[in-house]
Image 1 (spheres, rainbow, N blue to C red):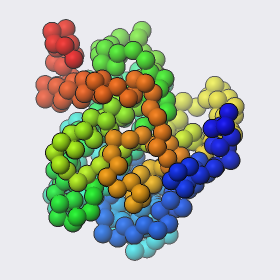
Image 2 (cartoon, rainbow, N blue to C red; image 1 turned 180 degrees about the vertical axis):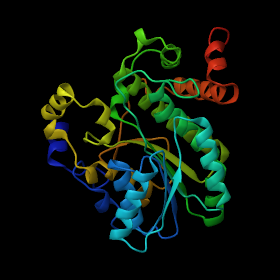
Image 3 (cartoon, rainbow, N blue to C red; image 1 turned 135 degrees about the horizontal axis):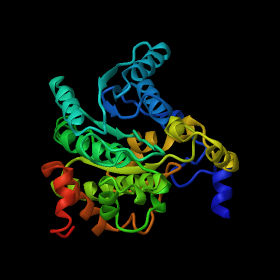
Image 4 (cartoon, rainbow, N blue to C red; image 1 turned 120 degrees about the vertical axis):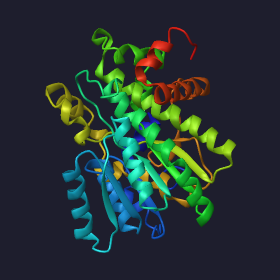
Length: 337
């Protein structure tokens, strides 16, 4: 009850910020003029506000997007407010592993540094869809595409940190909905990726993808530490906010859900605050592998904090990338993950 009251009142936590803090407020003292940031899902909502605020603070912002018109519109809005901003738009479809690889090749050809990687893009469809690679669409977009994107950009981030002395930061945008998933993550993914529609539940699939973001953060933090890399990774829950993420789920039940939770809804500037805080605030120097909500460290679900399961999903993700999804799912019958 006390925590609920603190949330509704926007009471600041140990960081000095709370649920009512905005992205501009948490970056007020940030000078990002020497930094380059890649922000996925920057065409609308939280991603667009994150891009706007980081550009305002001086960062070069790269907006990879499937919807290039939407990304160009975001760029135009930023430039209309900050004419000197440096914003680049590049094509990327996170549900396609080929598209991810092509994007990274394009980015590398520009020979730009990379300080910040914000894996923000998300999809929450109500129907069962498959990616071109043969992976359930929600998982492919929200997790697997970001897993590959991060993997392919890691060398550049590490080198940038070494050359500049500025610690690199990766932010995975998860959700408290990750706690709604229970059971075996890989088995459920295999089931819904084999077109077993009877097992498919849209909300459970979304929760799985957000749990995977948490697992990715945990294992990647451990890997970066073992490498001695000057790069951190953390994940965030932005809060409850009505954005285009729910555009495919409009209807009476969705409207009723938002009506009943109106007291807990954040504005988009408030929802972007935790991402911007974790990406830029000096207080988080050397902080890695953590989960944040309302600009303060928070707890994941019990399953979300299971390092063994995080390592297991990482290993299986690598098999998907090296052998292909079909071969990886077939191997489940012969290998232990």
